[in-house]
Length: 423
Ligand code: GDP
Image 1 (cartoon, rainbow, N blue to C red):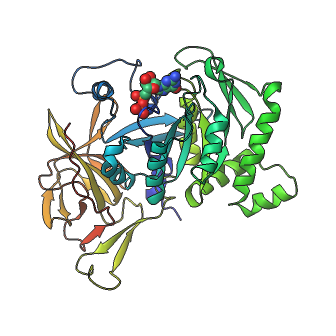
Image 2: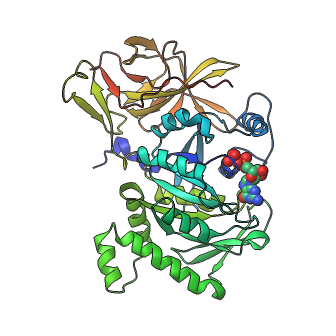
Image 3: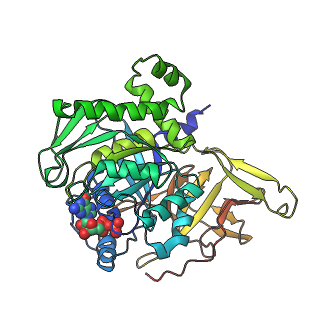
């Protein structure tokens, strides 16, 4: 049951982009920010410490660090439905494992980026296993379809064999390497051709005859996967009936959350192909904050009991405040930025909160939502939202923040030392 106050959460997606170094995480993130309208020209940099500057600097160093959480807006193609997509930075470099794990806790879903010419490499496997450990629902993006040696089938095969997961090929590439021209939506049986370099001009057509058999083969694979999690679909499948597009999307989304089903997409972020469809897939297949299990907290003082008392915090802006500080960043203009995810309740600027990990009362100064190249000052951060707090002096990464005077709880967190990262 969703209350009226929770309705906005249905259009929220809190995601990470997980990839090992070089698979194309930076390029994909950059394109996402471009297509969600916050950056006006690919590669353009702005004055001040903008997102793009961060990315440019990090690109030079070969490591990706962006703002800990960036808020983007997306209207699903073919609809007027608006979504807020919070992109949480998940460092992909193998030395940043602690950071990766900590950010995993904050995500409701992730996009795993693979280099389609390499398939699943050992390093991608590491990132994948981390996401497994924290039960993060995922979709896979077979990137670099334009590169020599790129093969969608290679990625599909590796997901099955090396990761032991069930791939659901929701797309199929038209051509590969220098002949990569577009993408087929396997569920809807539509073909998308890219007709300009920026990828903003897309021609939609029926599936070309030469791909018809392949698309049906892929469709068979994904219906089989979806039938595993949906009884009605299973019956239809056994009777040879065709499920509707909506049924298929709903079943795959359920499968992504509950079982090991991974919708697989393809594209080339460098060549600006497939990123808008990837955003549509984020909306279609990754869960909103109401669809993932509520975060739990352990009641302080009962940790030593055989079974400590726990308290659940379903995503509800009207519930008690429960938030996790997941990253501290030093900002040249405003000083210490504490990035938080609010799971329950509402954090209000100027209010007092209680840091249950440190046993300290703290005053929330200003609240910010970070966009790709701007910051928005807001009065509140509600359940499901992410943003940065200015003014917290004592709160560190992994700390639980609750309402002042509320029963003290510590959110399930990952017990890791502070990461030693010098920016
Ligand atoms: P990251 O380390 O995962 O953040 O990867 P980057 O986005 O920095 O990309 C690594 C390298 O792969 C860069 O040289 C990119 O230009 C290149 N690259 C990224 N995406 C694509 C793609 O779709 N096709 C090709 N051919 N190269 C790509």
